[in-house]
Image 1 (cartoon, rainbow, N blue to C red):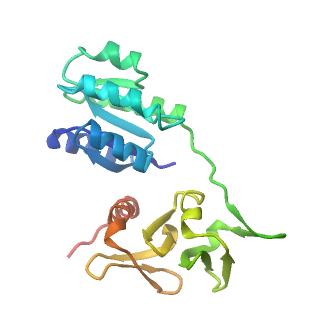
Image 2: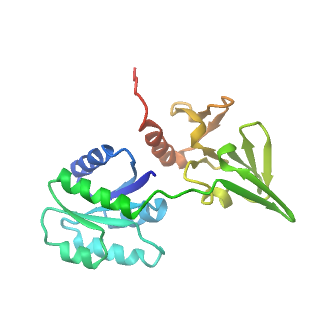
Image 3: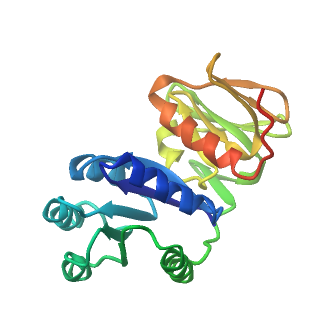
Length: 243
């Protein structure tokens, strides 16, 4: 399972150190960074990360208020880990339901124990593999692993399959955006792509190339953040040969 996380911290050095530690574990991907609690609330609601790291130095009261406020908008909050230079805010962090509390500078042993406990608490989930397309009394079942991409067609959606066939659903692309497994990412107003089939990302020309048919799908500026996250995911288990 891939765990996504967000960091709320105005200290860029601390951000980089934490990301460096988490990279060693291989299955943690940074969804977003925020400098303060206002930005933090926005990225948590936007990306729904599994874990949120909050630096409580000088911003503890704001951070605790943010956590309380999130309960108004979310049925289940992400696991929250507080970070601080001292134990000063530890009691309030526990009272506010934080999963753990780390003292700076980072201690690799403490991080390892905390992340292993986290994985035990959040075991790998099986994603649904079959999608049902309903049209009046017609029910069509398709395997999500066989979908190359989805394309908007006015108020309907085309499912382009790896065998070349096209299935139609009389619903908008937005309807399927949050229903599909995590390997489906929206890259354009008109496209959601199965990231398992991406072979190339061209930032210069703003398109993704698919493995199967070399089809090039455009991505737009409004979905650039999704592309950046996708690039990180695809790069994690690759051998880099940069020119």
